[in-house]
Image 1 (cartoon, one colour):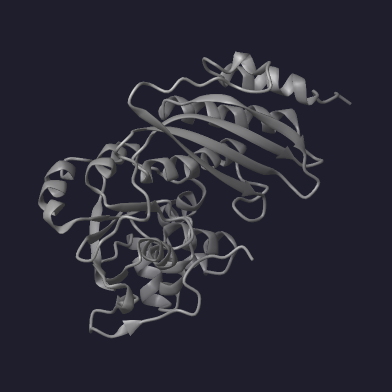
Image 2 (cartoon, helix red, strand yellow; image 1 turned 180 degrees about the horizontal axis):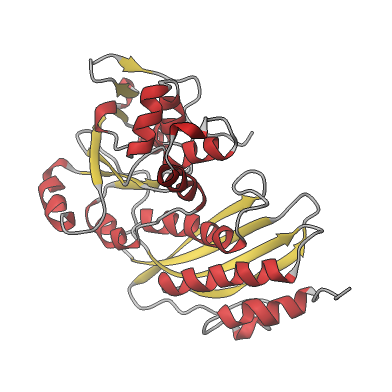
Length: 328
């Protein structure tokens, strides 16, 4: 039986070629990053675990891309341009070199596409299943960092893309939705949206210039809006007919109305949720109308005492028992 490489051989063969300047070919215990004059370093960290964020039989190339992209999504939401990342990779007992090679290929493709480099990390045995933790670094002008804390009453609330695709893609993969409802392309679309987020890095400068508060949607639109409002000490009024949904999601919601909760609270969208001051909305629209990204206004920021309200098309209020995905 062919022996597997040890952790040092793995690093040298598959990950050192991904490293950049200041990483010393991953031969040292740390990296030395240079930050350009006038820039601040934005740091974020997200982890993925087998059975929670991906399935053991998912393609390792796509698992790697998801692990990197969920972090890129956080950077873009802060108005930051992706710069570098480090990775801690926990491998289960049954790992093989073919899996590692495909995983590293996915990282290589995406770090090239997003203009990032690997700075270091760690590999270790993970008896409970594969885990991937990435720390990502981005660059932003010192005065342009956009937190969750800056929304004000009267600001418009926007989201990018469509909401609910990933959550329903997961339900579909788990067999909780009858796949016969969908055509082949619809099924592929939903499952890909779950496994492969599409962070819109071109939005980073726009967020930095116009947004008063911003975050990515990882745990569900409604729950994440509640987090943003709590951080900014405001409330919000949103309108269900304004929330953008893809054709497959709209179809399943029409057939099984209860899945509106899945779409709005299930998570894994990795779209942007942000607020724009009312006096900047026209300029913001002009700056983004040529971007190949759909951007939808879904509501307005209210007083904190008003809470976070979701209104149906008839003006009635919708409420859900759980408003976001919770690990515990």
